[in-house]
Image (cartoon, rainbow, N blue to C red; front, side, top):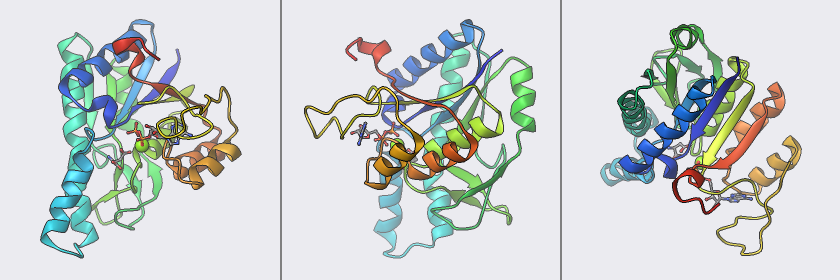
Length: 239
Ligand code: ADP
Ligand code: ASP
Ligand code: MG
């Protein structure tokens, strides 16, 4: 049976309605017989909001405490998504980065994943549950919460896909794929059907935020297959 990691970005889980929509999408995959691990970002705007609270208090907040604050956005999103799945009859369980645990180095606010203990996740998949993991966060050797840098949920998803040997890592976002340029800015940007890791890394290094650069480096290193898709086709049929 195939195992899929599905990552949903901030806009995809930006409201209760959208969270319910994501749950429906996940249910479709489960009904097809797929084993699903979901990675979620915080609801859109939430990470910025949390960061600005910290910077309202201090110009130079302690990075450890910044991580303590900003990591909470994802915790809310995964809990809500788990409730939404359970509500439509899909057994689900959510884990923060430290509950998995996703181990990282100690560089607060831009930590790197060093190892993922996958036993707990595999145990829950075996029980037939959809496992929902908080993106963007981990735990350092001291036991402190770390975050992976802006856009870091992509890296969580790719790292999990590599660790679990998933068939594919699906990145659901607010555009229907990778384009020749940012489709929100360049009107005649074209969708690229297939892109190499190298080209994607170049695009990410030039500032395209469709995927965090570290996630592409990770995918190249472990040969993780990635599909970038819109999470909204289901909702309005326009893409
Ligand atoms: P998410 O919250 O789902 O992680 P992001 O905002 O981080 O989404 O990334 C998606 C955004 O990346 C799109 O809304 C788009 O404006 C932007 N983007 C920039 N360059 C590209 C590109 N070449 N192809 C697709 N999207 C791009
Ligand atoms: N929530 C984090 C951010 O806004 C991580 C992510 O969305 O990938 O940067
Ligand atoms: Mg992103």
